[in-house]
Length: 341
Ligand SMILES: *Cc1c(COP(=O)(O)O)cnc(C)c1O
Image 1 (cartoon, rainbow, N blue to C red):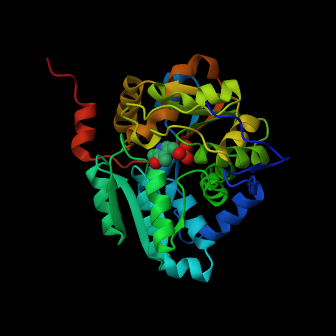
Image 2: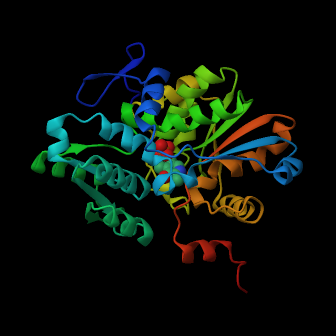
């Protein structure tokens, strides 16, 4: 376990002892302006059948329909839009198990910035192919023995690149918050909002939006049961580090919350919940059969928790951020297939 980062009001000290102010809803609104005309305003789906079965009104914010297939485009594009001329010319480096890589690669392509992406050898083939397809250079590493942050930092130093981390960056958090901002703008205030949780960029950004647009809304982060570092961190007040968890939710295999995301989550979130791989597959099935949408395992975390908690949510208006839809078709079919005997 690590010590909680020292707080100075609404700022934290980063590892280089620089004071970094925590982003606010004003940063989320500014990100929404930068994203206008570049990101999709994704649809909010509802299903009378889901509402009847769960006894609640559920509003699904469908980021599986976002550009490159996940909300990560929002944070990446917002962060790259804020690069100065020198940083743009030198280029960006990012490390990611998938969606952040594609988001940086696509955003960099749109903005004319060279991109280098550090990806694990076992990243889903579709995610690697998409990253290459957007014109980025890909550097591979071993997720279980090598430290991607160290590799990214070394590349940044060698080539003068700017590192954009997948969640622990003010511009990334602000960009991710625009999904919840749109949800509240479209459907009004909610009683509860459920958000998929890895390193906490999406949850922290959603918290900033919720605090301004739906102040009474309860806010839940949902992470894989096998990687409950977020729940333990939230409940103990210290950032807990774990080994890379084994779960089908490959977008949430993070080892710890961030130095910036954690204090926002501690301050604004109601609780952190978990979902098992079996519950993720059940939710994936409902998405396919009832809502007719393809959702990747990580994107099912939020709805899996709503299904488990349904009796406590009776009669409420509940938001669910469906975070992404990038899953290899063969893997998707295998996950949904009934177990063979
Ligand atoms: C990255 C990702 C998450 C987790 O987001 P964090 O900001 O790291 O908490 C959830 N779902 C999908 C589909 C993702 O790509």
